[in-house]
Length: 127
Image (cartoon, rainbow, N blue to C red; front, side, top):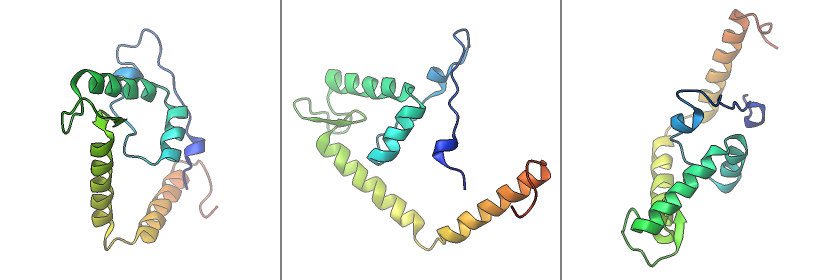
């Protein structure tokens, strides 16, 4: 199975027309702390995205409830709205996973990866 530790980081060239900074639209506000920290190590540009959300919050207030004199949570949300939205996202993900056999889906993906690597000659089948 593919591990996050095996991911290689790529730094864009200074002259790139479309650098990683321009392509990066993902922010890690709805991930658990451990995963978020690992992603920050792999993609330091996420720090800039996080800072941008905080600047927006400081200028305009919470992007959900528009209150300004509240404690900052994450991703442009106050602490209260961030917790509320995080619970909604977790609930939605649980509903999406109902009735799915994740072990079988993982096994199917692993089989496809094995076949692809075999066809590309990167390894022998059944390793």
